[in-house]
Length: 144
Image (cartoon, rainbow, N blue to C red; front, side):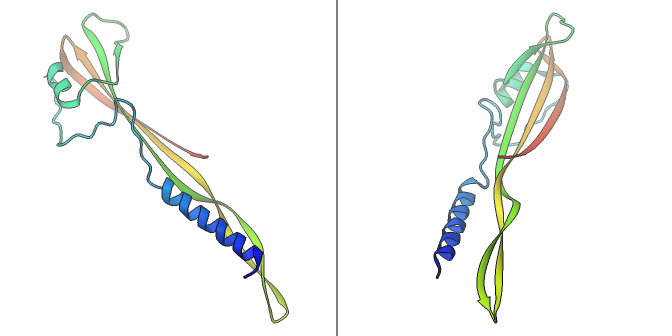
């Protein structure tokens, strides 16, 4: 094997090892992203203490807008990040000469890409009772 072939092999091996380490990584926010052992039933009129027992402490407590006494918004946040390798280009390497014709090897070039999703569930708490909720989702993807 030529020195160039060895270099390409080691580049590929390093890329494969990196992809194994990076693919499928997942993180969650500090308080968010709690894994629930079983499904939680949520309903309007549920006591705030029951919501705390089911989901734990909220990631954030916001005042209602406009401010109304006894009213607040509890925010539960879940953040997921997945890193994968995506093809970002190609590189051509001279190969063997076959029958007087120089062959070229085309290899893909991979770049790590991060996909991040944030899901926020906002609960409206009025005088210790959960009266409504909504879910907001945001997805982002970027090349590292």
